[in-house]
Figure (spheres, one colour):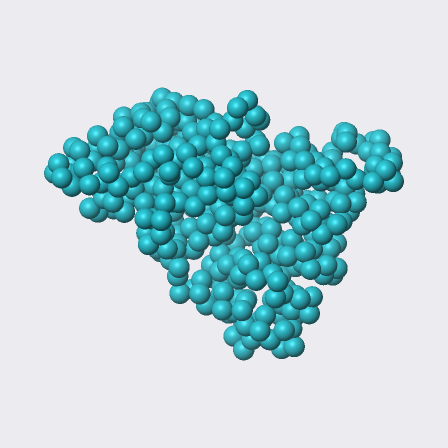
Length: 430
């Protein structure tokens, strides 16, 4: 088959060659996604790598995806972002949510499809690790909102609010989990795959709400299963709880939504051993981190440290960084966890690296945890300093988001006066 994909970069051969090499599998990913779904209707597929201030990992458009340069790491570990945006060609561009409260119809379906393709390409454990990491991010966002807040539900009630206020991992990961649960009710995964295909064809080039999804799902179940079996499936789905209520999923989904893998357990155990040794020595098998072929395992290791942050000390962090060179890892997913963790423990050797991290890329996913960690540990003035230094670099959406994090409480008058001077030559107000 002829190539249907291409990459566009900023002027300069060093950009284009590097980006094209990192994204050399675009055709393969497009073909695999098409094979799992329905025929690709848009003709060609192009990724435009935007400047580093772009605040999102990617933004889908028919024929053209805008992407952050943070997906270009050098080891193809962030190419899953391209898989996600390719899948949006079906759920997001072909079938589109009618309003922001139904955003999960775009994002949940796309994550589900992305992980199906990832499983085909890299194995089921790879996709399970993606789902495990997604679940951690989901809970962080729901707890930040409050589990009873409608923004922690698949269907956030906007009431005229800025949609960015409700934007989080919830529509992505909770939507994925709901679809995983629906799949589990089917006789075979192929039955659910065929449902998604029929759903896309039925609603092609229209904008819908979850009510259309509900109707399509029940009609499909009635069509392919005997009456009693179809009724059992339909009665098993509590749409109101899944879609309208915040917080945890219905308990019936617990067994289905188990994303544990042997590799994840191994790397969580490595984090536990570092904690147990207290920074006095290194685990015998610490080289497994350095030799990991799936960077997601390194992220799982850091998530475990974050989950057990009460037992982490500066001495432990120093030993980890000496052994594993975490601070200098170019993968932004590592920095997203490592820098907030070290900031929370006042581990000063990483502070300048964290400053650089928020100064060379403006992707919200990576900025927000660092600024939250600074504010939560009483270093609001440092956060202001970094924010003002980068005000002309950050996208307006990032400026609004970071400003909201810093302005949770009013800074001191001295801070305001000092920052007012800093801001005189920069496009930012307080």
